[in-house]
Every structure is written in structure tokens, then in C-alpha cells.
Length: 146
Image 1 (spheres, rainbow, N blue to C red):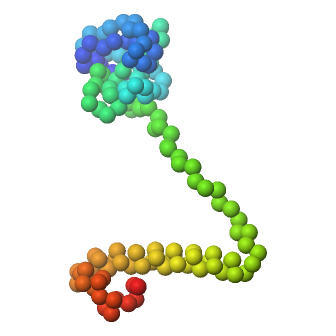
Image 2: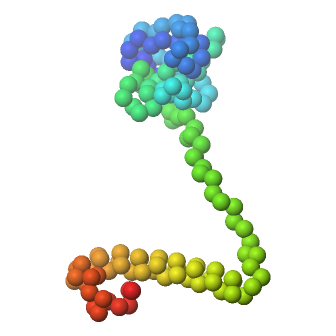
Image 3: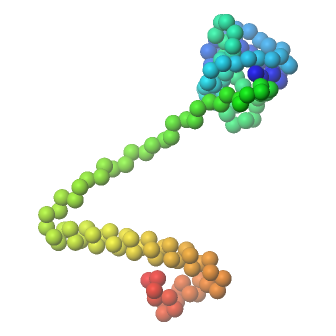
């Protein structure tokens, strides 16, 4: 159950451009049903009354609200948006038939692994209290990370 904070318009659809079907005065209680939806930057709730009314609760960023939750149960929240998935190159099987091709591919992998180990070792060493940048620039000092 919500209480209106200001004059609230009840819409035909969960959209700010939809037809306004009714208005509610401030400090009126309003029962909602179902799962809220997000549209046009607003969180919309279906009003529990005949006619299929929708009411905007608040902006998604929280900068403006028309309703305040006063219910005894948990406030209904909209579902999380679907995660954005970036397409990746498909993994292909190693089709190298020549042992030289296979060994060069594994050598590239080991170089990348060594670079990662050096990077992590460098990052860890920077947090040591006696470590300074002069150690990094002096190759005789720290040959184990080169």
C-alpha cells in the first residue's frame, strides 16, 4: 500500500504519454498489485481497482517520487534489467597438425602467463613498505620480476 505525496495521475498504460484516466489528491492510500515495471525512467505500479490504472511511483534515479510505501509487507520492486552481454569470439579447437605450430602456440600462451605473473608480482611489491620506484627502475635490484 502506498500513500500519495502529491497530486498523482492515474494512467491508462505505464507510460507518461498515455491518457490520464483519473487524479488522486495528496495523502490518499493506494493499493497496487502485480510486479512493477520500469518505463520512461519511472517505476510504474498497476493500481488494484477496476479499470486497469497505472501510477508512477518514482523516477528510477530517485530524484522525484509521487508515492511512499506504507505497507506492512515488503514493497514490490521491479525485476532487475537483463544484463548486457557482449558477443565474444567462439572458442575453436586447436587444429595444428605440425608440432612446431603446436609448440609456438603454447609458447605464446606461456609468455602471456609470465606477463600476468610479473604484473601481479609488481602490484604486490608496490604495497610493501620498503618498496619504492627506484627498485622498479633498477634492473640489477629485482631481476626476479623481469
